[in-house]
Image (cartoon, chains in turn brown, cyan):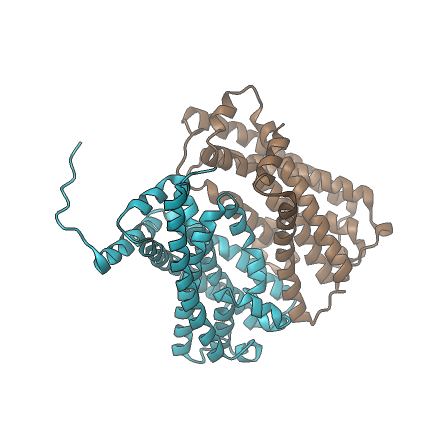
Amino acid sequence: MAAWLGWKIESNWTDPFLFTIYSIVKPLAAAMILVVMYGVITNNQFGSPVFAYLFIGNAFYQYVANVMVGVSWAIVDDREHYCTLKYLYVSPISIPYYLMGRGVARVLITTFSVFIIMVVGVAFLHIPFNPAQINWPLFVLSLVIGIIMLAMLGLLLAGVTLRMAQYSFNIGDSVAGALYLFSGAIFPLEVLPAFLRPLGYIMPISYWLELIRRSLVGGVAESFPTFAAISDVNLLLILAALSVLFGVVSVWAWKKFDWEARERGLLDQTNNY
Amino acid sequence: MPMLPPVSKRHTGWRLFLMTVIGRSYPRVVGMQRERSWIFFDTFLPMLSVAAYVFVYRAIKAPEDYVGFVVVGGAMMAYWMNVLWSMASQLYWEKETGNLALYIISPGSMMAILLGMALGGLFATTLRAVGIILLGSLLFQVHFVIASATQLILVFFLTMVSLYGLGMMTASLFLLLSREAWHISNLAQEPIFLISGFYFPIKNFPAWVPMVGSFIPLTLGMDAMRQLAFASGPSLGWISVNIEIMGLIVLSIMFLMGARLLLNYMERLAVREGRLTESRG
């Protein structure tokens, strides 16, 4: 039901055609910024492994920005905009499940956007994509673990959002922006200054994006040194272990912040920003 | 409850206009500085994307001037976001919070209210943009080569006049769009960053793209600024700076007149239908 509600909230402001255009144009334009930047400097050498690296990383990063931020944004939306959060709390539902359900609509929309971006990349920008060479089990497994991991990170952010008032609008974008920088989404972690690289190595998103790249275009992804020494299985194990770790932290943080928000009467706190 | 003193002097004409401008710009100038977290987020968030794009250029071994283009683009992005979310969408937010009806029945001109919003927003955003330029220049060692300071200041001034004129004009349009305002503002981010060339010279596009993009004043403004502030700028410019200055003058006049016409239309609509301040969620 929460997923259905999420879908209605995301899409009911317009007709389906306009909504489809909206869902395509925004992420495609973001991808095209990188494409033009790359093309200007390299004189359109789109066959290079560097381009495939940044294009695929950027495309799948849409999940981070939409799923993680989407789950936490439901708190802002229901508390500030619709003023329904306190009613949800007194209804006989589990709030974390409700938040996850709200995230499902974002997963569907994002999957559609990522698909379109990848089609454009393969059709017009020479992304070396061969369905017969894709490691489908690795891709599906990585994608599923990744989406669950992002939803759990979203729960962590939702807890933080619940506890905050005037900063809650920016927290999701800040985290998504920082992860874009530190997760090696659009450039290898070696490009970062040495003291910043550990931030990338402790984030599960870095391993998740690497697995997605390897499963889709194995040879290209392996030509970068960041995780070259780690096998697919080990990468998967690291991703799973970090996802469990962050999942446990997220559940603990949610319970703590949820309790504090109830105790301090923050459930219906609005600031009209 | 203490009573407010009676109004001893009623202002009319240009004095009322000026007081309305000052009154509406005051909360933007003072209020935004009081909420310190906004200063941090408004500087920090653009810096994250600036840093990401800088590292992309470094990964593909771009000339160092491109790093400077990204820093300038990040600073100008603060203005675009301000125009989008605090000008174009503002009357819609005012409707949602119940202020719009008060604006309409107040003796102050709506044009003065929008102008106050623009000037207050421009001031507050300039503080953030300067922060981004300083921080970005220090962190990434940007090297500026100013060809003409006078022209650079003129281009910046005209870009701001036309940009905030655009914001004033679209405020009325967005008000009529109701809930779609949020989504249209969202949609006017990445596509505009792309066609306006926030992070790269627009010269690299087919000619029709910058021509279409020129309706956004930042397209011409940033192209001219790149030509005037970087060593490689002139060779990467789309058209000459003088033509871009002329274009910005035309856009300024067009958008300010458009703002006036659309506000009049909106006020007529408010009187005729009586539904303009109705919130539809």
